[in-house]
Image (cartoon, rainbow, N blue to C red):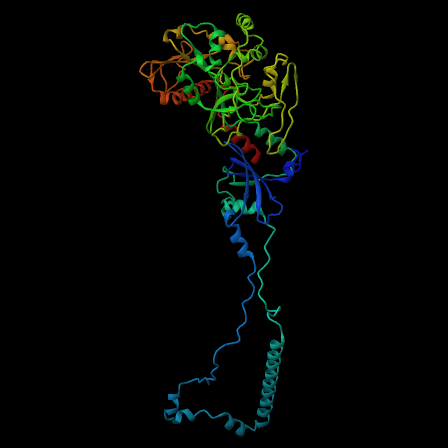
Length: 557
């Protein structure tokens, strides 16, 4: 077990959990990432409607680039050098009144009050007066003696005097970082601590009981709720007068078999991601929401017509705050995977595929698809464990920030056991299924070939693992976007959906002609809108953002 790893049972005791605005659960670990750093630091696990995020924060008054300046400020500069030259001392006799008062002649009224000597002589108080004068003289002599002794001791003492030397206070190394974080962000205020005026409104800040035994299981159930919908679209290339399924999927094995405009269009749909290192949706349940390590990673194939994005190594991915979509280009290399995943595939097509010799592998080059441009790719649904036919394995829980090492499912080897999709569906019963719909994007060299496109023969290549157990592949609702390149440089679009239903979506409409610059964006947005409309038509669909909010409300209550 790695150092610093916290098992799920001990995790709530290490963190302090708060509910903010009845929508966000934040777990605060009051521990510095660097044990040698004295600045207040904390680690926050934030669970909200838009996913889960880990923050590591530190209270600093200066940026890290000013580290040298911070060292100079915290260092004691010492006392200044003494200077005995205090200047010329002037003996000045202080007066209560200015000298001009002495020149003013006195009046009789000023003599109406007798002097002290007259009062003493008239009342025989001379002895008492002399006694008081002796007390005052003794006190004056004692104070002069102590002042002279203090002056002598001060002259003999070293510099600086340790009794009166000013020293900077020691730096504080104990902080209540949770209180600092909540107060600095405006959650812990005097108004927040007051009772709400309306009983129906919960307080803006609620502290959860970390000692509750059910808190760990409740948080695990919250983490299993997806925050983004996932969709998949499949891209095909059809040459002139092609009607056979095996010929269509063989087109993408080499760039010489496809038009250059097709490759540019494919790249505009999304960015390439490695299915083994991507933590989001990858187009199939067996490789989504987890990362795996390849034993001997091979360089990506070069010179293909798009077959590299068939889901074995790479797919085209695009995501925003509410949706993630994968674009898959089926290729002949998927032969070993598809018949095992779906045993009910069309027999006629399987017989044809078994007779086709495997194409020669394309030339390999040390190319890298690069990282995705979306920062928060780990906010998807939870990772699913591997499954076997008729037997399901219990997924291993892990609350560490690093993704666990899960053995990769070898989908291309002939000895791969069949994947039981129904068993996988039982494990992910808390997740909403993808819309009961298939999206195909078909590139046509000849416009008239759209009427002869073999939809039924290619349906078995569109398996994602989220299909309902009672549905048959031939009965799926299929939406097809046909694209044809015109001589003018524009592109003609033909939309084909289920007959008798107005389930198509904008921005693309049937018969539209678009430019090359906007083709990829319009196709991608149309696919997303079709899937969204299909979900809204279903009574079983629930908005993804409301699921985490409802669960958070139950935890705070």
